[in-house]
Length: 289
Length: 336
Ligand SMILES: Nc1ncnc2c1ncn2[C@@H]1O[C@H](COP(=O)(O)OP(=O)(O)O)[C@@H](O)[C@H]1O
Ligand SMILES: [Mg+2]
Image (cartoon, rainbow over the protein chains, first blue to last red):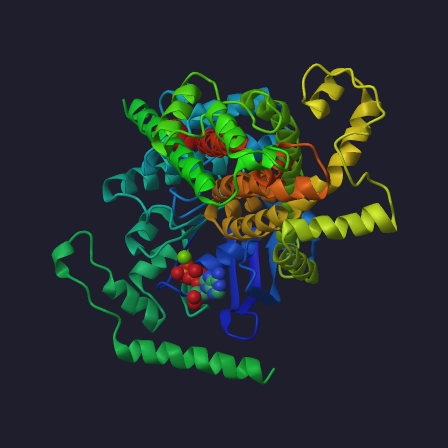
């Protein structure tokens, strides 16, 4: 049974421009689904729709987001917030801007536990210490009392990961969680997320543009182009035999980490034209109901 | 080391500022026409009378010498003697200072509350008619100066629906047990709520008149800053944790949004204190500003000098307090 099931989700800018085109995808309990596509394809938009943080300029026009069996779009705003807060979490892209500069680290890990889920402060503090140990941050006393600006980007991302796992969510959305980090730190953070995901059995929706990362972390993969899912496949099959031409081109465009000198093959114009034609055909069908 | 350097520079600029103010006020009030001695003497006084009195107040000496004598006195805490009342300037000025401080602080508190509420409600209801109404109210509050608000308030709450006192600081017939001139503060400490209510009723309109324009500035700036903050990543992250809109604004956005507003409020507060001069006159409120106008009318040179220097000291102090608050609210500076 899928923990998260998105059915025919369409999102557009208020006024018209489509951002997501009848997106469907499932994330089973404990499973990792990768979400790849070029910049602007709508990867983050899917995560935001699930977490109820779409920008005010965007609106959902059709579809369902079933989270743990409940259709988020049919809940009242307050119910939806609570349901998401209790079952989901976000590991954001940029650790430098995702922590509140005027709050100490401790409360930023425990706030959800205390304020939303009703834990006692003592339980929450103990939990924060355990989490810091798990994300391999030494000196928990110092760090919990620190302000974000006192810590490095890598440390802050570890804290955001700890905070995401704090309430044992069933689903985590990780939106390019290593893109903003130093290359040297990226690998450690990736390993940390993958390890914690496996230990906690958390379902993970993993947004990335790095197919190398996908091959290491994900079991399922959705390839997105212009807000449309062009391929939905087990990761193993994707690397063996990508079905959609766009997927194949993406794969060819990725430098093999076994042979970095092979260089980049940009997605051929013909493939881009073909997939654009698909999107245009979709829009025509949608316009005619 | 860094902090010592900053403190030293701060002290230096403060001293230079005050010295500049002293020089300007001393010479400017002696250049404008009007002779204090002539105004003191009855009609028919002779040249000799004028000369004798001038000598008594040291006004016969050349200006630079007069300035030297005054500065030397100020260094020892002697601001001279008021020509009209013949009392020490320092004593006069300090006796009026509490009234003006209480009025200014009351106005500041009102402005922060009114402006803060406008900004918070406007942010909570952003994009709706409520925000539009708040913007219009802010614009109106800003386009009318404080003394006109004073007149409007007198018309509304003094004449149409007379609920507040329109003149003075306290009802004269009341028996005041106070040992300081901080009436508002001391009445609270002595648990004399009857007196407190009377004092507040006198203060309400002048304070509100001073507060309205500042409230509008705070409302506009804080709302703008809050709305920008509401789009930042850490606010979005807090939303995913299950916090509702109001809690997100108060917990995540308010403190960070308040920082840029704070500096401006400091500057605007000094303008507000400047505004007390006319507002106190309008409401016959016995504070420094009212005394300043009397001093100017009577050409009471030592008193004018004393009041202006005191205002300058207040301005400098306000700026220091703002810097301090900024450091307290901003963890990045606190640890620097
Ligand atoms: N706040 C916003 N307002 C309007 N359009 C937006 C906003 N955020 C993203 N978009 C648009 O939505 C589309 C998808 O964006 P996004 O999901 O962020 O792409 P990505 O796949 O790079 O994560 C893009 O075309 C982008 O321009
Ligand atoms: Mg993105």
